[in-house]
Length: 434
Image (cartoon, rainbow, N blue to C red):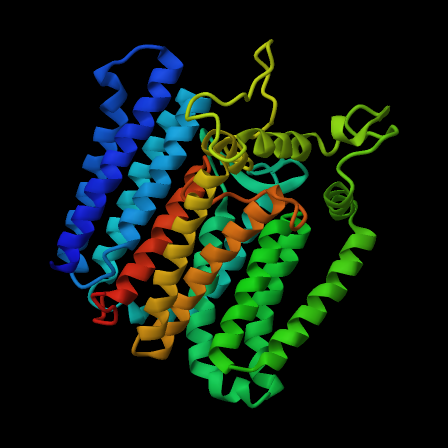
């Protein structure tokens, strides 16, 4: 069976799973059995069939599993978002159409030679800083939960940091490919442009209080530097600098100090100062309210969950139990309705996506392609870990999205561009047929 036929068969399986899942949610919400329950499944299958045809025309030798896994993750996300808020699900569906369009444009424009991106590496680096600066600008910049992540222009609201991540990876892949030998030798002058671009990005992120993205970018930087040079020493120095910087930021930035306190001590047995009300309150009723309710949601799911559409996410008066449930905390909603077994399967899909991405990087036949694929894959893996780890209290909670699943247009568009990059690299005859 050819690679593209294998991709098509996998998409058919995803379409069937989507139909079953959405029908379950629709029936649970509407209490009726109707052919309308298949509308989303039919829409998604047609959309991804179009994406498959684009792949067949532009990247016929690309990996056959990445697109079906992305389709499955987006289908899970939209199904759960519909269960929480049908209006948001409609908007997310429109953004996925835009994202598939972005994927198609990426494949069409770069199918002949995506390696020419390396020639514009400095423009990508400066572009990344420019995108990260947009939320800090007056008028268009918007602050949400203490972090300036958003740009608001008219009715359009988006996070430019999602696209900045892709641009920074392209810069790092190009620069590290060119300088990896001298960087491995430890020549300090060759670290100049690298540290300038990366340092500028980090300063902007700290200035906008987007510390979750700062952690993500720092991890990408270290991982790609290690892949390029093979020097464990650089990773050790980077980790030491990160720990030292974290201590300084913890001391002087109240937002970070609050996040760490919530992480370590989400419950209190006595009232503590509450910044939201200005009065003493139990921490679980104030600063750590979201995290604590999220943990209860995880526990309520038990092994096999309550079933799609049957979770408890609102009070008897109709108020949401967990604010921002369809964005930052959608993993908690899925854990309650799918249970430990269901979300373990979800994480397995993420692991398989990362495995295929790293395999593409290993089999790529030039340095730029290896670094590009490794950077894109690692960013995907680290972003997943940061949000899931925060919800599970492995690390402090940060406000970033779960790739392909969380509600948000800029996130899903950026992840489809990331998918396009991996498909382009794998199309160079580098992926085996096993």
